[in-house]
Image 1 (cartoon, helix red, strand yellow):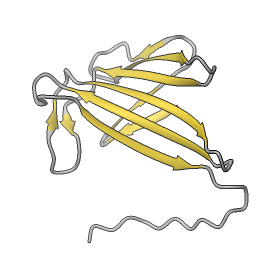
Image 2 (cartoon, helix red, strand yellow):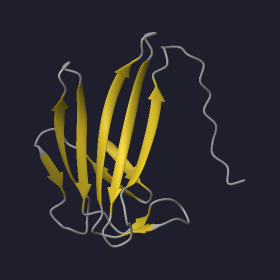
Image 3 (tube, one colour):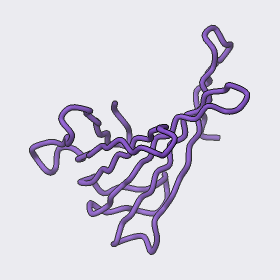
Length: 124
């Protein structure tokens, strides 16, 4: 799986357990782990560090190379049968943030053949 953080990206490789570039300046380093709950519904936890300094959002708060991002991937089936993927991201940076920055993103799985017409983003 590849993820993008603004102008940089990181790959999460399921085998082996840890992944990262040999050169500290080349790529982020990610470690993944499956977490289990009592009802056997799992969630994937990915911890990434060694990010290049950047910004949390365009024209936003900066983050340093000491930043750690922890992501939790949850697959949820609603009572009506809809399937959702929720990603909760927590960014911790001792240099620029007084408390963790937390962001939640939700994706609904559409049935095959569903009419979805993506449109490009505009700056206006």
